[in-house]
Length: 350
Ligand SMILES: Cc1cc2nc3c(=O)[nH]c(=O)nc-3n(C[C@H](O)[C@H](O)[C@H](O)COP(=O)(O)O)c2cc1C
Figure: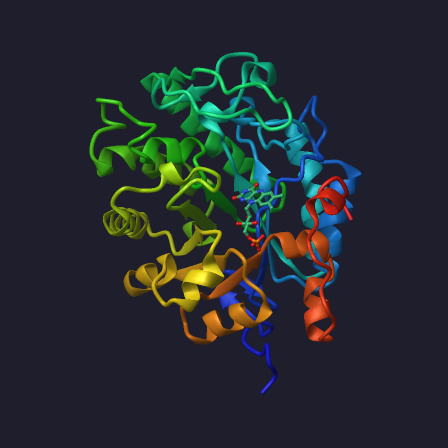
């Protein structure tokens, strides 16, 4: 049997007919036009190249559903007609090479900055983040707690972005509910101290996610929606869930109730904890019948093993895809990979 026969075999996930189980993870690269959030020629070539060399499913870089969701420079959007049209070139190029592509919707909430969005950032509560805004190098600002009408407006922006994604030819969307951004800020008790219906207990804190999913479902068939969750923010260990098992079951109950079937739990240490057989994925797999996209320090062999053991259904790769546009072809031909080097690779859209 071929060493990577599970990873590299075709699979149908709902309406997506994937030629293999390899997913390109969402990767912010900062190459969109800054003034209007449109897609550039370089971005079209970047996505096309990954499709040409055989990736099954591409999850785009985070795309803002509104200007208020922008966390750094050169982030693409899906809230204007011009942005939507500019994405058509990407989806056509990717489909032309037989790959599937979904748009990741990303609102950074309190991690925006008035220099980027023209007003103080929006967040569930007035709790300032530590650290500095990416590339702007200024400290994060005190966010404005969102009123109910702000909340409704942001939810409407997710709905519009989802509609635009389908108009642009995407095969679906991924809702970015992870990594300490807006949806996660509502979910985490450290950033949400609201006393209204969007705060309080876990079900109150999950309400914003519930309403975002409901709004996106108005525009995109539920089988075409992935939700990305994480138990922590990558660079902040204090942001982890206090009650991991309880949070996971509340999350899964909610997503099941909403008929979501594709889950993308993000963890950086997948390989290490997978080996210890006690990880987020195993806890989730015990309670989740649907599709699970695994990600985080995977290589071809660990991904193959995780798929064969039934722990994940699809395997996503981030940094390896930046350094190796032809990742899938290299595996098929048993050629070595180029190691990811942020200094060398991040400034270039190869
Ligand atoms: C340069 C870079 C940009 C990223 N941008 C995003 C993003 O826009 N949305 C997201 O959900 N995750 C983002 N991530 C996280 C990746 O999707 C992925 O989870 C992480 O890189 C771990 O996978 P890997 O070990 O295969 O690289 C980013 C990671 C990197 C290295």
